[in-house]
Image (cartoon, helix red, strand yellow):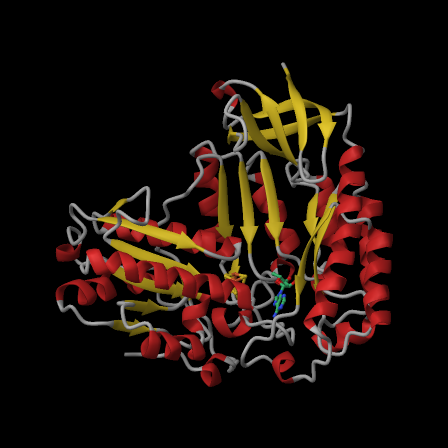
Length: 473
Ligand code: 5AD
Ligand code: SF4
């Protein structure tokens, strides 16, 4: 049993990051371990986790498991968890409880808990003492080890816990089973070294490790050949791409080279305002296939709170960057993340956040109430704000954010925009849904021949979170 260690997860050394191309192996006798058995992977959290789940699915299929449509029918259930806020935690523990009921009728079910919560010492301790029906726990650094861990679970009938609390390497040969035939996630870097004081990610995902450009470009070139229409370059802090490589090759170089592969659309998440360079802005401007969409987390509009958060920029610096972006890319949509109720946030601090929202008029914003995460510096800060106050601030913020989302969408009314149609709309089967290059959700009437294509759509109606339109042939 190898449990996670918070103490070790905090360590950052100068140790070289290795690119490993042979680390993932499925021994011959494990290739059939999943014959006539099914799996179900439930994903919580961010795109990084969604992509990790695509890796897990491919590994399970390498071992002959097939995907089950429902969790209830599956022989192997993986919960790929998120640790970012308390409510994500609670959802997962609720689900672990639900699987217990399933295991009462089918004791052979293997329940695995993985992802960011598995990297947390407190969580694994709780699982081991209170949730004894969990058969397997593995961390974000242990995905390639699934075949061996699952074999030990199934054949030896022993609980397996393996969570490396390491800075991490880059493993290049893990297979992937992509959820979409048109849009693909491509990791460009792993981990994070920013250590914002509220954030658990540097502890759950290790140190910042960029993938070498040739591996990324190879992957994108393959996707182009397979007919993919969009790639999203993924990382916790993509603007810092390459800084840990000894190559003099940064995010602007990577963006340029990915754009030159000819993929119809490229976007990237998530940016940290600190590392956004003028060269990057120029590159986005220069290549038509780089989507004019930027997610630029603000977190707070108060320089005092930003300092406590360890964000390394002031309100003024953020606004200067924002204005530069809007000036260079007037058509772009810019979205953000905001936390309310950070320890020490006064009404005046919060009003500064509202002021920034009033200035930036974001296309949309993800808003959160601060959630203390064990082991982070903010967790130990004095927090005097009542939950009632935090809720009230969140509501005031959401009202303003929604107002600007609607205003941003209103500008599209009557215009014709390119939309990548992905599939049937959730609400109405006669409709298709897709996204503009500025990541606006659009519903159109149309038949399935348009799925997977980028089509011109005239916008006929706009709402706060979506738009309706007509396909223009
Ligand atoms: N509490 C609330 N929100 C958080 N986020 C990250 N950590 C916390 C936390 N402890 C938010 C940030 C980040 C987004 C992914 O989640 O806004 O940008
Ligand atoms: Fe993603 Fe962070 Fe949640 Fe992990 S903790 S799943 S990296 S959002």
